[in-house]
Figure: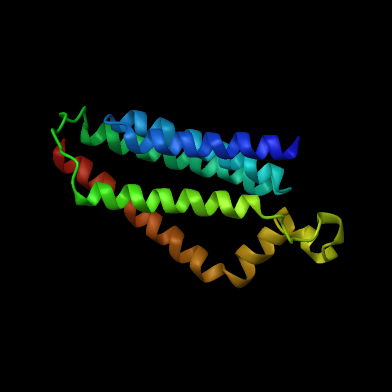
Length: 168
Protein backbone atom coordinates (compact mmCIF):
# COMPACT_ATOMS: atom_id res chain seq x y z
CA UNK A 1 0.00 0.00 0.00
CA UNK A 2 2.84 2.41 0.84
CA UNK A 3 4.52 1.76 -2.49
CA UNK A 4 1.27 2.48 -4.31
CA UNK A 5 0.79 5.76 -2.42
CA UNK A 6 4.40 6.77 -3.03
CA UNK A 7 4.06 6.09 -6.76
CA UNK A 8 0.73 7.96 -6.85
CA UNK A 9 2.08 11.08 -5.12
CA UNK A 10 5.33 10.96 -7.11
CA UNK A 11 3.35 10.72 -10.35
CA UNK A 12 1.18 13.64 -9.22
CA UNK A 13 4.28 15.72 -8.47
CA UNK A 14 5.86 14.92 -11.83
CA UNK A 15 2.60 15.49 -13.71
CA UNK A 16 1.97 18.85 -12.05
CA UNK A 17 5.60 19.87 -12.65
CA UNK A 18 5.29 19.02 -16.34
CA UNK A 19 1.99 20.91 -16.52
CA UNK A 20 3.63 23.88 -14.81
CA UNK A 21 6.38 24.04 -17.42
CA UNK A 22 4.07 23.39 -20.37
CA UNK A 23 1.48 26.07 -19.55
CA UNK A 24 1.53 29.32 -21.52
CA UNK A 25 -0.58 31.18 -18.95
CA UNK A 26 1.51 32.05 -15.86
CA UNK A 27 -1.51 31.82 -13.56
CA UNK A 28 -2.14 28.22 -14.63
CA UNK A 29 1.54 27.50 -14.06
CA UNK A 30 1.23 28.84 -10.51
CA UNK A 31 -1.78 26.60 -9.88
CA UNK A 32 0.18 23.60 -11.16
CA UNK A 33 3.01 24.54 -8.80
CA UNK A 34 0.54 24.37 -5.91
CA UNK A 35 -0.22 20.80 -7.00
CA UNK A 36 3.50 20.00 -6.84
CA UNK A 37 3.72 21.44 -3.33
CA UNK A 38 0.68 19.48 -2.12
CA UNK A 39 1.97 16.18 -3.51
CA UNK A 40 5.39 16.81 -1.93
CA UNK A 41 3.65 17.42 1.40
CA UNK A 42 1.93 14.05 1.02
CA UNK A 43 5.32 12.44 0.42
CA UNK A 44 6.64 14.11 3.60
CA UNK A 45 3.73 12.64 5.56
CA UNK A 46 4.64 9.21 4.21
CA UNK A 47 8.22 9.78 5.45
CA UNK A 48 6.89 10.35 9.00
CA UNK A 49 7.63 14.08 8.95
CA UNK A 50 4.22 15.68 9.53
CA UNK A 51 5.65 19.00 10.71
CA UNK A 52 7.64 19.46 7.52
CA UNK A 53 4.53 18.52 5.52
CA UNK A 54 2.47 21.13 7.37
CA UNK A 55 5.15 23.76 6.81
CA UNK A 56 5.26 22.79 3.13
CA UNK A 57 1.53 23.41 2.78
CA UNK A 58 1.33 26.52 4.94
CA UNK A 59 4.47 28.30 3.78
CA UNK A 60 4.87 27.24 0.17
CA UNK A 61 1.39 26.34 -1.05
CA UNK A 62 -0.07 29.13 1.06
CA UNK A 63 2.12 32.17 1.57
CA UNK A 64 4.65 31.88 -1.25
CA UNK A 65 2.02 31.04 -3.87
CA UNK A 66 -0.10 34.01 -2.76
CA UNK A 67 2.99 36.15 -3.32
CA UNK A 68 3.61 34.59 -6.75
CA UNK A 69 -0.01 35.09 -7.83
CA UNK A 70 0.13 38.69 -6.51
CA UNK A 71 3.22 39.39 -8.63
CA UNK A 72 1.60 37.78 -11.69
CA UNK A 73 -1.46 39.97 -11.23
CA UNK A 74 0.70 43.05 -10.51
CA UNK A 75 2.71 42.61 -13.69
CA UNK A 76 -0.48 41.85 -15.66
CA UNK A 77 1.04 38.88 -17.45
CA UNK A 78 -1.29 37.43 -20.03
CA UNK A 79 -1.23 34.65 -22.55
CA UNK A 80 1.92 34.45 -24.57
CA UNK A 81 1.63 34.31 -28.32
CA UNK A 82 2.37 30.95 -29.82
CA UNK A 83 5.82 30.82 -31.28
CA UNK A 84 6.52 28.83 -34.39
CA UNK A 85 9.61 26.96 -33.30
CA UNK A 86 11.26 24.17 -35.16
CA UNK A 87 12.95 21.13 -33.74
CA UNK A 88 16.55 22.17 -33.18
CA UNK A 89 19.70 20.83 -31.52
CA UNK A 90 18.81 22.10 -28.04
CA UNK A 91 15.54 20.19 -28.03
CA UNK A 92 17.27 17.04 -29.25
CA UNK A 93 19.86 17.29 -26.47
CA UNK A 94 17.06 17.85 -23.96
CA UNK A 95 15.21 14.74 -25.13
CA UNK A 96 18.40 12.66 -24.85
CA UNK A 97 19.17 13.95 -21.34
CA UNK A 98 15.61 13.38 -20.09
CA UNK A 99 15.56 9.90 -21.64
CA UNK A 100 18.86 9.06 -19.95
CA UNK A 101 17.53 10.29 -16.63
CA UNK A 102 14.37 8.21 -16.96
CA UNK A 103 16.38 5.11 -17.88
CA UNK A 104 18.61 5.67 -14.87
CA UNK A 105 15.58 5.98 -12.58
CA UNK A 106 14.08 2.79 -13.99
CA UNK A 107 17.39 1.02 -13.37
CA UNK A 108 17.64 2.31 -9.80
CA UNK A 109 14.05 1.36 -8.96
CA UNK A 110 14.65 -2.09 -10.42
CA UNK A 111 17.49 -2.84 -7.98
CA UNK A 112 16.51 -4.18 -4.58
CA UNK A 113 17.04 -1.53 -1.93
CA UNK A 114 19.93 -2.04 0.50
CA UNK A 115 18.58 0.48 2.99
CA UNK A 116 17.83 -0.80 6.50
CA UNK A 117 14.25 -1.14 7.56
CA UNK A 118 12.78 1.70 9.60
CA UNK A 119 12.64 -0.47 12.71
CA UNK A 120 16.37 -1.26 12.63
CA UNK A 121 17.48 2.36 12.35
CA UNK A 122 19.18 4.23 15.18
CA UNK A 123 16.70 5.56 17.79
CA UNK A 124 18.00 9.12 17.33
CA UNK A 125 16.81 9.09 13.72
CA UNK A 126 13.21 8.97 14.97
CA UNK A 127 13.59 12.66 15.97
CA UNK A 128 14.24 13.79 12.41
CA UNK A 129 11.38 15.95 11.16
CA UNK A 130 9.80 16.52 14.56
CA UNK A 131 8.92 19.95 15.88
CA UNK A 132 11.55 19.76 18.61
CA UNK A 133 14.35 18.83 16.21
CA UNK A 134 13.33 21.53 13.75
CA UNK A 135 13.16 24.16 16.49
CA UNK A 136 16.54 23.20 17.90
CA UNK A 137 18.14 23.32 14.45
CA UNK A 138 16.40 26.51 13.32
CA UNK A 139 16.98 28.54 16.49
CA UNK A 140 20.29 26.95 17.41
CA UNK A 141 22.70 26.03 14.67
CA UNK A 142 20.94 27.92 11.87
CA UNK A 143 19.84 31.11 13.64
CA UNK A 144 22.06 33.41 11.55
CA UNK A 145 20.85 32.12 8.13
CA UNK A 146 17.27 32.24 9.46
CA UNK A 147 17.59 35.91 10.43
CA UNK A 148 19.39 36.84 7.19
CA UNK A 149 16.60 35.18 5.19
CA UNK A 150 13.94 37.10 7.13
CA UNK A 151 15.73 40.40 6.43
CA UNK A 152 16.04 39.46 2.74
CA UNK A 153 12.31 38.70 2.52
CA UNK A 154 11.49 42.00 4.26
CA UNK A 155 13.66 43.88 1.75
CA UNK A 156 11.90 42.09 -1.14
CA UNK A 157 8.49 43.08 0.22
CA UNK A 158 9.55 46.71 0.63
CA UNK A 159 10.98 46.67 -2.91
CA UNK A 160 7.72 45.28 -4.31
CA UNK A 161 5.72 47.99 -2.55
CA UNK A 162 8.05 50.71 -3.87
CA UNK A 163 7.78 49.35 -7.43
CA UNK A 164 3.99 49.12 -7.16
CA UNK A 165 3.73 52.71 -5.89
CA UNK A 166 5.83 54.04 -8.80
CA UNK A 167 3.41 52.52 -11.33
CA UNK A 168 0.32 53.81 -9.52
